[in-house]
Length: 111
Length: 115
Image (cartoon, rainbow over all chains, first blue to last red; front, top):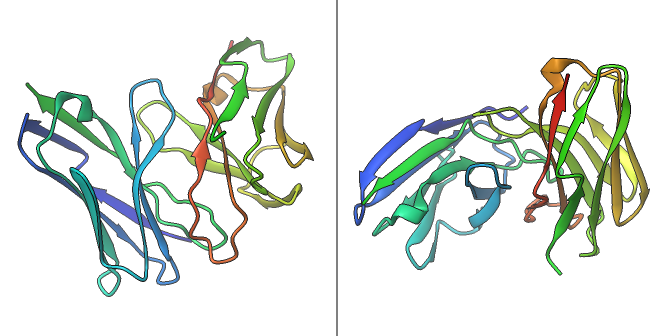
């Protein structure tokens, strides 16, 4: 099965700073690399994803980079805002569309 | 419509009760999932249905019984649960894609408390 490690487990930044969260995985067959944001008491929501035929994808303040050789991908958030505070999960797929979630990173953005 | 709807939102049940969780989607997705999420933990996969057939059971105890009556509905029948089964139960759906690179949409979850 897929082993997923996510770092850091908590990340505190000042508003306007950048935040980077890294995810490593073990299954070389993984080809889909999403990041989910989960606010307290709410459902996980996809914020950005990347597929194995590209190395980087950007959507406004959020970007994801993928290094398939090293088996890791990262979430980059620039110009952080208090509403970015949440738990972020990486969830690479492991065959047949099943997602394996990392342990999560609690991001705290202070005004 | 990109919604996955789960009912009920909250459920309190005794250890001898039988209850069911329901999940519905109208996005034409043919893969549906049940996840369990304990507090401060990631979602853990329980079951996967593909074209209304159970394809993955992650060694879930038999007190949890899934059912997929049609392509839009997914149920989770609960019987003789333990207090440690208290958690947020999340349903998700996605397109059935053999390459596996497809987005999963989550419902808002059912917060289950077993007393």
